[in-house]
Length: 290
Image (cartoon, rainbow, N blue to C red; front, top):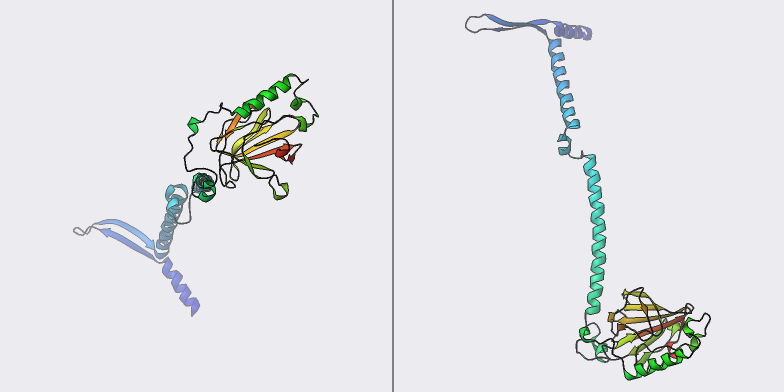
């Protein structure tokens, strides 16, 4: 039975039919085709395959593929990754700049420790344009003249003699004022804090070369000077820096103006440090501040 049905099916596929196109008025035969079901199936399948191949070629070799979800252009993806990376870098840079600006605003905000500042200075605003950095007090002038006179009759500047005893070196006072915080290295306080009136010029204690002149979050505007015999001096919490890295200064030269910059400052003062052979020393052992 099954074989008979199968045989009849294939016979029907091979049966030939004539398709005739005639003129409706004259009944004249225009086109005559002999077809079988097999031919019709093959022709239809061939047309379908050709259409699929044409659509695939259009998708693969034309920009139409970019409109297919999940089938993006490789170059477009690479450009997108580059843009994403640059955006992340810009975000990090913007965050760093915001943090820096917020730190600057915090330092410039006079309300963050107003009570402490009022104990050391008045409410008058500082006009740095009127500061005469060349003006020195009478005591400073006398001390400087005494130092120059003694150095004139010495065999050489003791600060420049290799292996000289620094205790015999003449240190010019950076400012004249009152010491409010002593030298306490066990508490990580490697210098002394000197309070002086606003606008007080700060002077170099010895001849040397400026190696640091910048701003830090904790200590504000800082300037550091390298002297002979491995001596370093640091001046912190300034309001204005008057020397740049690489400048050579002499003892008594004005290098900064007293201030209250940095998060660790509670009012206008100078934090002064003195280092010898990479170790901090007590500045009061060498300098009289009042």
